[in-house]
Amino acid sequence: MIKSKIIQNDIRNIALTIKKDAKVLIGKTILITGGSGFLGRYFLYTIWYLNKNFFSKPCRVISLDNYITGTQVNPLLGDENFTFIKHDVRKSFDTRDHVDYIVHAAGIASPVYYMKYPLETLEVATLGTQNMLEFARDKKVESFLFFSSSEVYGDPDPNFVPTPETYPGNVSCIGPRSCYDESKRLGETLCMIYNKIYKVPTKTVRPFNVYGPGMMVNDSRVIPRFLTSALKKEPLPVHAGGNQTRTFCYISDAVTAFFKVLLSQGNGDVFNVGNDGNEVNMMTLAQIVSELFKGKVEIKSIDYPSFYPQGDPRRRSPDLTKIRTVLGYKPKISLEAGLKRTLRWYKDEAKIQSLERS
Image 1 (cartoon, rainbow, N blue to C red):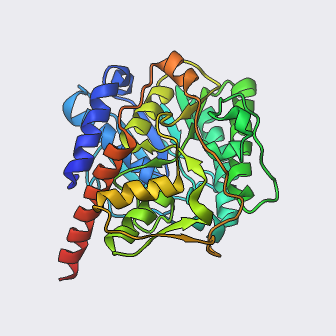
Image 2 (image 1 turned 60 degrees about the vertical axis):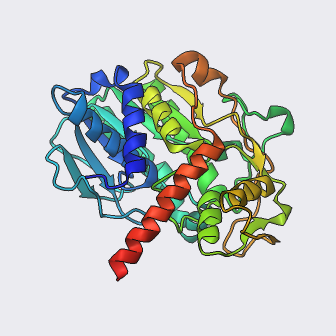
Image 3 (image 1 turned 90 degrees about the vertical axis):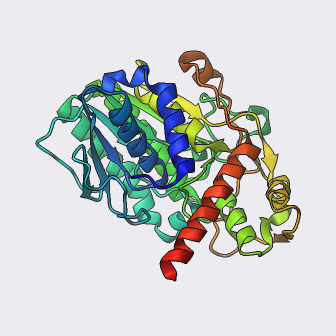
């Protein structure tokens, strides 16, 4: 099934952490949009593991994806509890099956891709979200999880870093990143309206820089770009001096949080999801990656390339007080440990691709 031992281990850890809360999924049906994307796949894999090891009656999954950035290759193809449908959520969707839970994870998150597909990026978080909310309203689902983004905060005032959910944001509706961050803000507004007017049990997560095994090597966000550059023995490209700071959340911590929010009782709630213990600037991150290669990788400061959107936020760090207090969430994987695991996966993938070409 899932070939990577690293991903297998991550899925096992997620499932063991959430198995008590996840009992409500026994015998239910969950629809996941963006099911072939980085985050969506981990949802699928985790439910597969829960079905196999803990559930007396399987949870059925319907995965929707238009494959604009995802791949149709999936180890769960052929599993009778998983249905894969090619569908663009910008168009309405219906099924005769009853659906109990919806995870709306469809979206284009990489800046390089949303520069390439600005209208698609905007519409999936707006039209797509409303289509899924209408579907949820019709099916009377038990929970609806919307994937927003930390980008809704824009370039936050330094006095509000770490940034709480109550911070209104410092964004531009006509900036180079607006197709993404403004559409996510509108998506959140739609969730709020459908919760208040139609009582759709919406929950929203704002992920902060999630990374890990399974992230496409051509994603172009900073961690995959650094790791793939290092593996190719190319200099690590640090933009504009590398003073921008970020916190990074390893995938197993993030997915654990996503499940906790999905299965929580707080309808209409919004939660930051991330790791608040490792705010680093990009030059320091490059040095950490270089050390994974025993310092043999050069670091090179460059101007922002033309394919990368301007307006990079200066700092990005979550205040996790709410999710810690309400849901008992606590990230476990340090940046160094997560980078090592991700690098091992990238090396394994490079070996597999080399064997497939030979």
